[in-house]
Amino acid sequence: MTPAAVYLDANASTPLSREVMAEMMPALAELFANPSSVHKPGQDARALVDLARERCARALGCAPRDVIFTSGGTESDALAILGSRPGKVVTTAVEHPAVSGACASASECVRVPVFGSGELDLDALRRALPGASLCSVMAANNETGVIFPLREIAAMCRDYGIPLHVDAVQAAGKMPLDFPWDLLTLSAHKISGPGASASCATASRLPRARSLVHAWRVRPRCGSAIH
Image (cartoon, rainbow, N blue to C red; front, side):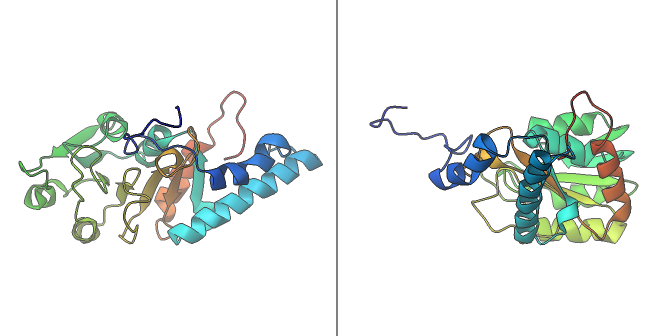
């Protein structure tokens, strides 16, 4: 962009901040080795990844081992949803395609409607939850700006013993992430970070969900490296 241009699409993606670029430079210029390698350059790169994981975990209030780095928000959402191997998944009618697409792959998917205002129909949500093995909702809508009542949603999920996945990609950097969650997805390019960089976090209190998500993550892939 030219210096005179005014960028007005930060809700879709943000420019990389100078501070973030400065943090990235060691990895781009010096610590470029595969962090899964056993040689020193690889282990130096691994130390940088571990530091980033610890900092993310501290910000989210979870354990470092429960933060998984991915190539983007779509992969993070798919990892959280499909990695949980849900039977019946409950979501909303206004989710981002990254969530709605992953939920459609479940054996049963119930989409809870919203009102004309964009607010979620909580009564319909409660009716849909029995028998579900996962509930997946966004924190803030990327088109309307409506913020879902996550504390109420989380309380309903607790009543039925259902893990709650929150797609917080649009919320991060704009509102406190102080709501309950069992699986949480974020994307760096929404908060002045680089593209193709995101995370999926799991709650330590859900050992089964955590183990399934991590098992899904480490499936053999060509050229795979530690994330």
